[in-house]
Every structure is written in structure tokens, then in C-alpha cells.
View (cartoon, rainbow, N blue to C red):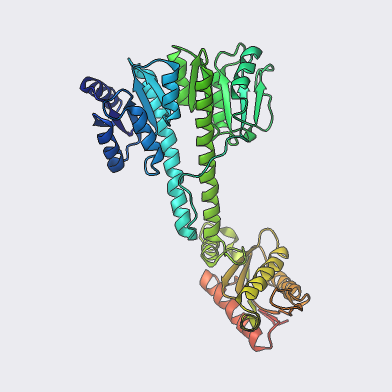
Amino acid sequence: MSARVLVVDDVLHNVKLLEAKLSSEYFEVLTAMNGIDALEIIEKEQPDIILLDVMMPGMDGFEVCRRLKANPVSAHIPVIMVTALDQPKDRLTGLEAGADDFLTKPIQDLPLFARVRSLVRLKVLMDELRVRNSTGKALSNNGHFESNPSIKLDDAKVLVIEDYERVARRIAGYLEGVTSSIDIDDVSNGAISTENLEQYDLFIISLSLRDVDGLRLCSSIRSNESTRHTPVLILIDDGDEERLIQAMDIGVTDYVNRPIDGNELVVRVKAQIRHKRFADYLRGNMKKNMEMAVTDAVTNLYNRHFLDAHLENIFSPENEKGANVSLLMLDIDLFKLVNDTYGHASGDEVLLEFSKRIFNNLRSIDLAARYGGEEFVVVMPDTDADFALYIAERLRKTISDKPFEISGSAEPISITVSIGVSIVNEGCDTKEKLLSEADKALYKAKESGRNKVCGIKCI
């Protein structure tokens, strides 16, 4: 996976060395010699990942990282801090500043490439979710979207997979107060026995399990649909580069070297849960936007845009069931009088209740949509004329037999509906003709006195 990497270091030799290493792995490399230049390049070029030296004159790497993460434009760009500092407090300072990882000089090639590729994969995922959110936002005309929402961590759930009880308990102790639940699975039966894995926000997996291959457990989690997007943090022996590379290739999202530093573990756990919950937020927001894009805001039924696409699909050459479709076109009688008498807010109440009654009296395979104004369409696959007329009459009675209660009137008001029915036949074999025939039948029902069903015959 190629990506644009920004290398920031005030020592030219270090810059050239990292540039050569990354270029040999087919990464596109940008460079900066100080923090100010780095911030300008990031604002302009939007790199995929940043390798940031800590010890620089003027503005050190910690401050650069803080500014990056405080800026919504650059907050999503992964940062690997690179330094000769090797004290735990320095690593912790970098991670608390917002860095995604902290590598110590001299940098080993394989861990560097593994971390870069892993973080690039994460950024690609986040970028794609952001793009889809923007698309859904545009389609749904939904202006509400937080690029940097507040993420709660105190109700998060973590599963620790470790067969040394003392180590597992120590990890749980480190995380006490960080999350609401820390469960432990000792894989005593040779596999993960904990149920409902989709409930967890993070898996912590030891690669030093006695009787189970920890990498295989990681692979199993990644291949399961319900846990595919859940972050995995591994515990690995310092210097075990080969297994680290394998883990990153599988899709492990982070690691902590043994012996475990409790402060570092806490910071990494928080970061992974925060990434996961932000991704969940983006997915949920995207789903909501897409639902809004195909749903009518007043009635919660499908809108005309979705109806048109649905009918196009029905009449596509690949769909063999297009020959057995019936269509109902419904129009609320004298609806303008409701708006004029009680107001548009009460009119919306009528539309919503009308939609509920229609929806509740259809089969699961039928599709109801608001066609426009007070007109609605019901598409009924695998339905002949007699059954379509029967359903249409049932819908008519559902509307007329029980008055509608609205806030603009002390007494319930009577509402009726006229319905036109069309079916696919030799002379009506396209979306346009099916809608046109139903519209003609609806007009006939209106002309003959309203509160009627018309199609091949009027009821």
C-alpha cells in the first residue's frame, strides 16, 4: 500500500536516511527540517502519515503533534514520533500529545514499515468513511455532522486474552477506571470461549499463550464479520520483530512490548478505543444519512427518488419477477382543506398517521413510498389484479373507518383516500406505463366520487 509520508527532522542525515528507506518501499516522501515548515506542508499537502522527530529547535515534536491534533484539518493524520529518547516518560508524553506510535532511534526497518502500513490502512479507512459521510450528508441535506465529536471511554468494554492469570490481573489493574468492563479469557479450551464478542471495544491478545497461537486468534477476529472492525492490541516480547510483522499484516492495530509499562498501555488502550468509537460514529452517521437520502422526512416512508430506482430495478432485464407486479397510487381526498382549516403542522400529522396505517397493512415484500404532496405509491411484487384490488380496498377502509386525531382539532377528523390500481400486462410493461395507468385509474376514482378504488374495475 503506497502513501505520502512526511519526514520531519532537523538533522539532514536522518531525513535522507528515512527518505531512502521509505522510497525503497515505494512510499512518496515529503520532508521538513523544522516544526513551522512541517505545519505549513501538512496544511497544504495533507500527507497520509507523519514521521516526527521530537528534539528540534524552536518547536519540538511534542508541540507540533499537539497543534496537529488540535486542528480539525489535520487531526486525523497518523503521527509516529521518532527520537533517541528511550525513557518511558518520553514515550508517554508523545502518546499523550496525540501520537499514534513512538519509535526509538536507531530505527529498525521492519517495525517501521509495519507501523507505517498499519497506520496508513487506518487512515484510508477513516478517509473513506469521511467521504461517504460527506456524500450521505449531501444526499440527505443533513447539515449536522461533527468532524471531531466528543468520544466517551468510561463505558467501553475490553477483553483480555491471556493464560497467565497473574499477568491478566495486572493488565486489568492497569485499566481499572479507564473502562467500565475488563473481562479475561484464558483460552483454556484452545479457543476464545467468551460469547458476544461484538460487544467489546478492544481485544488485548498475548502472543505468549502457552497452548494457543495468538496470531491465529487475531486472524479469527479479523475474519469474523461481527468483530472485523474491533481494534486488536497485542502483547509481544521485545525484539520479536518477525511475529510483529505478521501481526500487522493480519490487521492488528497496535502493540505493547513486554515488560508492560502500565502508563503506556493505558494511553494506547484509550487511543484504540477512541479510534474505534469515532469509526463507529462515522458508520452510524453514514447509515443515518443514507437512510435520510432515501426516506421522506414527514412520513418516514421511502421517497420518490428511491421509488424510481426500485421500479427501474424491477423492470431491468435481469429481474424475472417484473412481469408479476401491481402498483397502487393513493391520493388523500380533499387534503388541501385539512391544511387550510387546521394548518400545515396538523396536515403533517395526518400524513404521518396515514403512512403508518398504510405501512401496517402491507406485506413485508411490498414497498410504500411518498410520491409527492398527498400522493403515495405502493409497489406489490408477485401480485395479480384481484389481490391488488383486494389490498387496495382494505387500505381504503383502513383510512376511512377510523377518524384521525390531530392537535389542531378538538374532535377527530374524517379522512378518505382514492386509489388507482395498475398491473403489468402486454400493454403496460414499463415503469412509466405502470405509473401512468395507475394515475389514470386514480383520476377515475376521484371523478366518480372519491373514497373509491379503481383499476380494471371500480369498487
